[in-house]
Image (cartoon, rainbow, N blue to C red):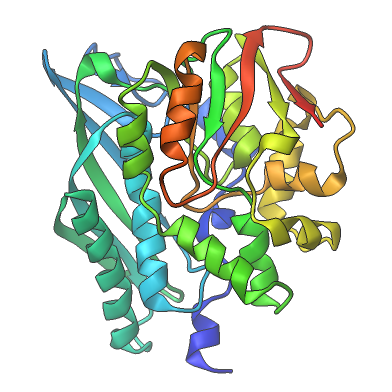
Amino acid sequence: MSEKIEFCRGGGCTAKLGPGILERVLERLPKGKRDENLLIGFDSHDDAAVYKISSDTAIVQTLDFFPPMVEDPYTFGKIAAANALSDVYAMGGKVITALNIVCFPEKMDLNILGAIMQGGQEKVNEAGGTLAGGHSIADDSVKYGLSVTGVVHPDRILPNDGCCAGDKLILTKPLGVGIIATANRVGETTKEAMDEAVASMTTLNKYAAEVAAKYTVHGCTDVTGFGFLGHLHEMMHGEYSCRIYASCVPYIEDARRCADEFLLTAAGQRNRNYVESFVDFGGVEFAMEEILLDPQTSGGLLISVAPEDAEALLEELKMLSLPCGMVGEVTEKQEKEIYVMK
């Protein structure tokens, strides 16, 4: 077996622990004394921590790392960095610094590590941040990511649970990258589909966030390992319900065929177990259910925007490079939290 194939054994956000497992662990941990300057922290389902340091500045802190999901080390570095940087954009912040997180086998070719870190460096540069160092350990498999610091005005934070009834929901990237990456490892998808997945995963959410900042956005999250429905569940936070229009959801076309052929991820099934009691799938096809549950690596922003701004925001987002869509709307709380319509 070649080193190139050994390098990619399946990873990205499909490698994350399931949301149900995390919830059971986190709820049992002792809570320390509350710091009034910690605006968003441990007791939140948000994408990053936010700590106020002055009346006009708060620090955004996040980290993310995982094993490779593509064969090319340089591309993997770009994907992992874009994914880690995304949490700052989901909070409405600006990236300022990043630190490398590296796990790497000592016996593996160091040129591979160099290519990974080059890809990561380029994405940090593109974000306008500074790569300021990092930490590495010898491990039996490759893992890479970033610890990222950003800044945001305390009054302009975008929590994931800030949505309001009547808001429109906009998704800025196509779903299906987890299914496509899984199918690609066994040679069961097209080069075109994988190229589309890589283009999505390496695109910074910086550009969509800059567009969204011009409009009245009440809540925002990035769609990653818990899938579209898992992150949507966190946005509703038990206070609201929503309608999702499956026909408006952007996804990589071949992901539907792959899902029909049961080329699925274990993480997607963990997501189903976690969220399905909150969802009325409304008779949509099994493949579409799987796309909505599919764990995304470096996925798009899911934006809850005031209805009067929704069309203008969507039109401006369409000028960016990736498929996007107005995928639903927030309603007052109903019997089910999420209603998927055909």
